[in-house]
Amino acid sequence: MHRREILAFLKRGVIYGLASPSIALPRDHGFKDLVKNPSLFYAAVGCSKAAEACITHCGEVLAQGDNSLTLCARNSREVLVVCNALRALAAQNSPHLVPYARLSAQICNACETECRKHPEHAACRNCADACSACAVECARFA
Image (cartoon, rainbow, N blue to C red):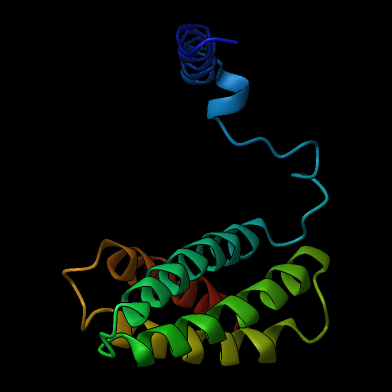
């Protein structure tokens, strides 16, 4: 395959990807009715995704020798772990959800506080916003 063919192939793929709603929009694959606490579930999913992006960004900054995001990375890692478990507990309406939501709110609030110290980093801002939203949802259950 020549360079022009490869570029044309990629161009068609990008155009198709942008035009196709099945790719562009998230799907619940029929699980929506199975999730017992959807607002908390989706808040935890969003927080987990934002924390993963923040951890990645912090790692890149740390690799360049800048240690200013060390605590941000640590807090985001805690949020990632906590929100992954929170998502599972919310989905099945676990009897442990209420105390775990209380703990999750505390951890999300701590991460939000740390991430807000770095407004110049989009990943930190996004993580702080997601943590705030998740903490609000957790407070509704706690």
